Image (cartoon, rainbow, N blue to C red):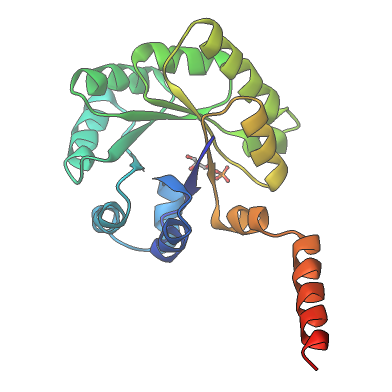
Length: 214
Ligand code: E4P
């Protein structure tokens, strides 16, 4: 399973990139709004840093709007993936983008059927939102298992991005259940690196070393 970072913050992206673990970036309108920057300008900054997939979401909800915006986004850099919401117009747009050779990420997926439809329309990536399902008392991780099994049985090539990740357990479970990618916020990335026994171990090694030097 690869790691994408789920942010539009350039410092967080740079930091993850420097760790050597970054397989891509996902953004969404809320994440971009939080930064208070020009969307296209920020995408230019991100794509000059990261050569892997960078998802940029369309705002328009009508097919024609999605196509116009998506073409503009795709023109920013060759590694832009156009993010499209899981709607009827979204599916139509995915079909057109696929014909144009533009990669797509179908977002806001909350059922296996939505994932299957998105894949059949030609989606490069499908993004089931684990955390938001958990928030309403449903099992987000089971959705990953269902989609992974369906894609496996039917030899579907679309890749599953486990999205709306809230904690390290989501990450481990998404990997075990067959997600190709987990897109994670910077805070969760930090949590993945840390373990109290690692800190204690380092402290003990250093204390023993310093004692031996006296
Ligand atoms: C992924 O592509 C989404 O932007 C993101 O994971 C949504 O996460 P949230 O539910 O924490 O907003």
